[in-house]
Amino acid sequence: MSSRDVDRDIQRIREAHWDRILELSIKARKRLLLVEGDDDKSVIEQLLESVDQLWVSRVYVGVAGDRDKVLRKLEKNPDWYGLVDRDVWDDEDIARKRAALPNLEVTEGWCLENHFCDPGALESALSLSAGAVQAVLDAELDGWLGYGAIWWTLQRLREGFSAVLPPSDLGHPQKDPCLPWRDEGAFLERLRPYGDRLRTMDVDRVVREIRARKTALDALAAGERLAKGVHGKRFFLRGDRACAQRGERAAIRGGVAPSRGPPLERQVAGLPRELRKALAVKAPSGAG
Image 1 (cartoon, one colour):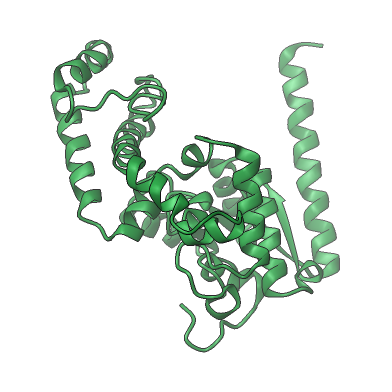
Image 2 (cartoon, rainbow, N blue to C red; image 1 turned 180 degrees about the vertical axis):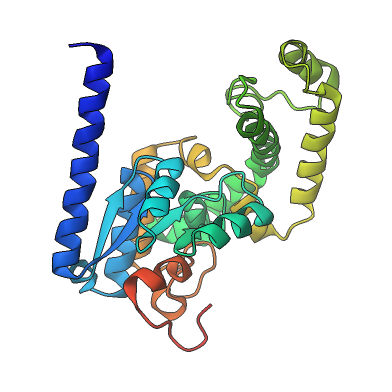
């Protein structure tokens, strides 16, 4: 059997899997909510549990694999719902995607993890002393915003050009803290080999765009900087991933609203706006 035959068989199995899920969901009168990965599914199911303990009788949370796969499945199945990370999309990108896919919802922050980057929520969930997480943020936030500005700019280029660009760790506060505002010459040297191979890439312009992105992030309110300027997945991975996941679960169980502070049930959480359609849950009075 050739590799092409194997790929074709795998694709048939995948399609049969989703056809079966659709068939069972229709029979059970459940709505399908697609997310990107297993971690997303776990967090979303816990959020749904905190909003409505009977959610499992009405919603099936399916893992598509990544954001593009969520989008493709929604294109084929417009009655399904999807929740994806904002990542490097801007507001115009999101408006365009949602115009084409009305049942698509996008996280307000960089990714799902950003909704749990609130210092007070993590301190409470992990039984840390008041100010412990804030102290770490105060010391490291600027570096993470710089890394976020680099990632955001280069990733948009990757998506636009489908090009091989510098490693994703470039600018990472712990792995590769090379930032243009600290040593522009060194940063340019890291980019120039890619500019030489990709003629349409103006390296000097890329650096200007990174600087502009960082300036725009610095101008945001503290909560927005943390939500939209920090790569949430990478930030959580800076330490113990299991510890971070425990923090997410404990925050949800305790009714700590991600990244905002009010009780989860009152605002139907930072994410709940993205979930209300799938749940058919009416937001409490005063909820966003």
